[in-house]
Image (cartoon, rainbow, N blue to C red):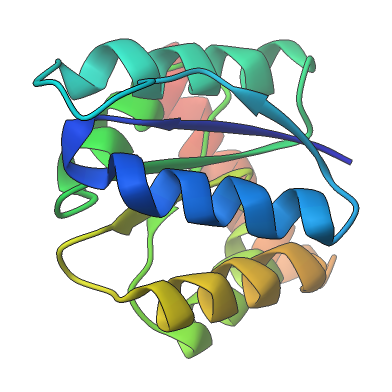
Length: 147
């Protein structure tokens, strides 16, 4: 599975750790930056990663900033993206089971490295339930993009 990853300066260190963790687990990682701790604009990197997921270049995506809020908002502006901001393992599981999210966001200033990696592992290993009620709700959410 190919995972898109992107971050701003506030999450650069955590992005490197997450990307290394993913590679060690056997995932292919497409890194959309940033590539250093210098100040930058999170929408540039979140949008690049989200576009890769929306186009099918990558199957899933992970975006990071200091809080995760900005990157999750930016990613969700890309048509076809369902990005959840995650800070706990139960939410990581439930957003895959019920919302079939194709991207997740993390806040480097909110979760530490160990929790971040546990959230990533849970999110990636949890399949969508496929239950009709959840698919119906996802379809309604995605239809909002057509308004």
